[in-house]
Image (cartoon, rainbow, N blue to C red; front, side):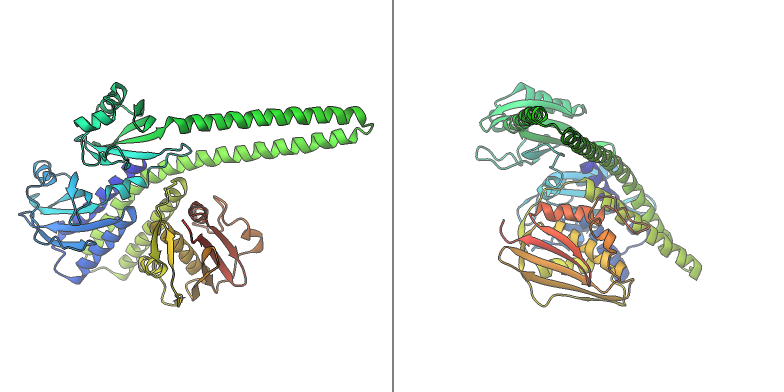
Length: 510
């Protein structure tokens, strides 16, 4: 569901851009380029994107925003399969067998650009790294899954873990060397064919030279069309290990219970004071109530989280349509009154707020794997400040030093965005926010300090709890999700007053 939602969102963002081209040729002025860059940033929030491009009628690239070293301007795409599919269907198309300008495997998502007569005027598209996109969806709740495998609708592997036996990326499921690696296992073949036929959530146990694995697969649909098939692969020994660990824990609990019972009987036999027994009973009842309350709260939170995730996914795509429609109406209306302009601004503000709240819900319920890499803090904070709106009367003081963090840049940037937005709210759009860096022997330390009124002492210990919020329009999930990110990095985050400061520590080692 999560993968489908993100891929559909990418398609909707390209459709929104295509609608702008439908109105006018927006590459002729600065305003148009600003709109394209803004939409490109929206796409980048869904997945880091290598290239955004536009072609002419002959399907030669005439414009691009390019993150690669080489520029694709002038590149002829007319023979690409996804271009041929668009010419036939006039619908968006995915291609997963492209090699980028840097020689890496990539996915291209292309969208038709038509004029008011519905004639094809070219295409727009994006290119992104499939491993980077799909791997963030690889964690399946509490199952210790080793890896995610993605196969396209041509039976080609586009994401798969590297192993010493065979690199299957770029190969097809029925290729001889792939089948040899899978030992021509009939269960695996049946699982794949079930997925192709649209059957949901089947599983197969396969023995390869890497050991026995459990595979669970399901089709991935974009706009009702099956584009990919996802397989979650888990070594069965890890499942058996988890089961054995659970059984061992239960054995220890039973042994402990038996020992406690013996002690209680002995004490009861030798004690003339029945008050001890009553006290023990009261303590046990209190513990039982605490455990029951915690389990009830956990179960409710899990149920709320699942329901919230489904609602958020369902709202996400219609909201992008509303945003695009509002922007197009505003651009088509040449002589707006002040009241009409104010109405459009209120619409934009409401849509942005809803988008932010949906993102908070999805960030909280989705546990993305951490992919660490070295990156300068100055680069991350510049990316963050370019992505948020800082009011004119708010001064942000950046650190006068820098260090290299080993972290997942997109996840830590999400933490920084949340903390800075909270600080802007705290100073009520008029104050000073200071970003400070320090370090000790084991940790890099980042502090964000503001001149706001501070956090009430009674709330200071609760602000990282899920669903706790003092904001009328908040979800109560933002700080909880960010705390989870920091802890997944092996770090900590705390909040203090006088002045209000959020301090996060990230380990220097891996």
